[in-house]
Length: 327
DNA sequence: GGGCTGAAAACCTCCCTTAC
DNA sequence: GTAAGGGAGGTTTTCAGCCC
Image (cartoon, rainbow, N blue to C red):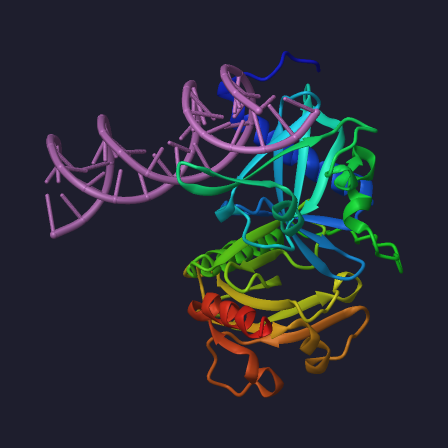
């Protein structure tokens, strides 16, 4: 659908549309090698990109414009919004309702090095006019890529070792609803800690269902949420992890929570397990890692004992871990 | 064409007032 | 005492004007 140029009162639409067009380009061009996580609360970073080949995470900011000036993209960014030198800044121009033929891909550190410095209402600001015209001499030229190479620009330097083909998720409606409830509960507990920004995958292809970025340490942790349902007749449940889709790493944790069907609330106790420890707790059997979960039980838990935690402490625990791995 | 700054509009936050 | 509503002022984002 073609449409007229964007009006000033549609500025916020321009920014949002630009972001979504970029996410779609990244997912499609990378054939699933780049996964996009969107923040539940906007704090400047528009997304975390997960590069599957090496498990690395990239904070990304998108600057979208509906108009160019003399073929150049105008970008004005307050210094306070450019806090992570390794974060990527993507500049795109919208043509009608899609991304234009050329895009800017640059780290915030390089952007601050090359851009002009000025002050807007007394606040330090970086300003740039990036030519997107092919062949034109510009100091930004090495950071301007054809739109079709957007994903390659992010994947640059990585030699793929394998292709990722995530298995389809087949879940019953009830289990699915319980699982979703668990993800929301974990998200809510993480939201108790101001320093954590929470992201969800787009699309949902990831082992880690919830990802948190520590605003001070800039470290990232992925969390796979496992939810069991319990009641008086069934005080225990089984945590079941599909080995085929499970990719343990130092930055991925498994959190088990228990939904009490009778009183319709979560039990006070949860399991918090580094994903690299799961194989030590239980051996894979027929493609699954399975172990029992007795929430709020006085009995001894054997090898699970070190991972028992109050659910109320989940956010603080994750923040402390993110701070620890940054040192 | 590039550099700098301001305008416009939406959004956000704080604080005061009002109603229950 | 508390919650809801509303307005003022600040902030953010994008685009445009002006100058070199």
